[in-house]
Length: 186
Image (cartoon, rainbow, N blue to C red; front, top):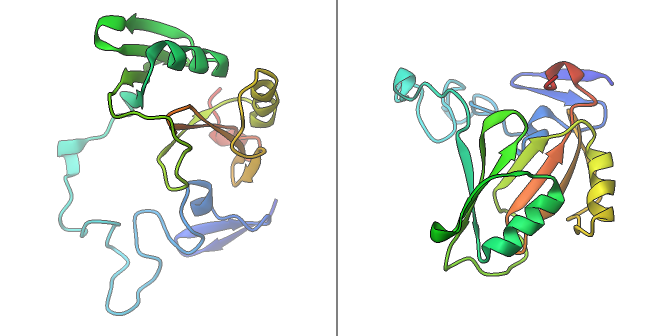
């Protein structure tokens, strides 16, 4: 695959940029404006000026947990078990289940919320993507387990991704790094 470098982004021969693989349009850039136009400097980050950053105070170390609101804990646990998530803890008294994600301590927390209603996912909804070895194989396995895919597996700059939604509209994606194996977990 050929890579064409442009200031602030890479574009792959399949037409997808690094930015599109993370949900940005081809002409948006991560952490800076696309170019110097209309008096804007390229040193400004999205949503904040370069001179107003939290710096070391927020020293981001990694993810802790991802919380997903659900309407029914039993149904949600069953759905996520079909996706391959093992349950590491369940506390029915407070409507909480903790699901493991690989070897990492952080996990996915399912939390019963009164406001969580059954709904299809809105297109602009947040998405949680998790790395798998082969997203297309994951899509086939999910389909065989009766889990409806939002779309067939689709190509991204780093590999392939397949997405599903739980009954409350929470979107979970499974993505691989077959096109960029040097970025994959081992």
